[in-house]
Image (tube, rainbow, N blue to C red; front, side, top):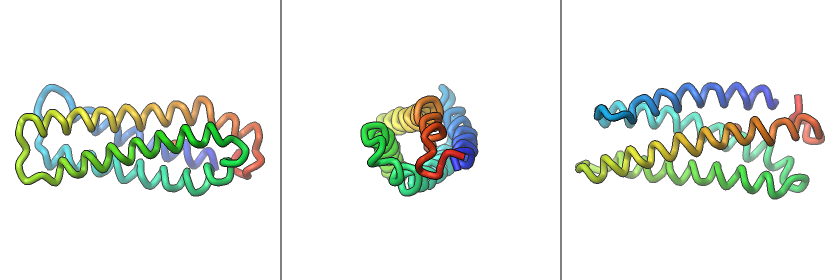
Length: 137
Ligand SMILES: [Fe+2]
């Protein structure tokens, strides 16, 4: 099961990298940026739902602080995703909205990457060692 989560992380990273490549100094078309963002957000949010309901629920009583920290990271990415989605819905986008959009997209990418690193570096190895949840393999 951990292997499955790591495969999902690799897929999410590809999508995050594609989004990040659109956030450079050259302005990108809003529709293209929106499309890349929605790809990354849909992969991230489906993955978080999968982790929250499966892995985290089964480990919440055993490692409450760790699970709470990772869930808070998921919630932060969800909130950033919601904020970006709302900005993308605006009829008119001025310089300020565009600047906010790029900033929020960068935060979205950074938080999603940070969460992947923490899970793979600190959490998954613990799960694999304990293996009381049936998720270790
Ligand atoms: Fe994850």
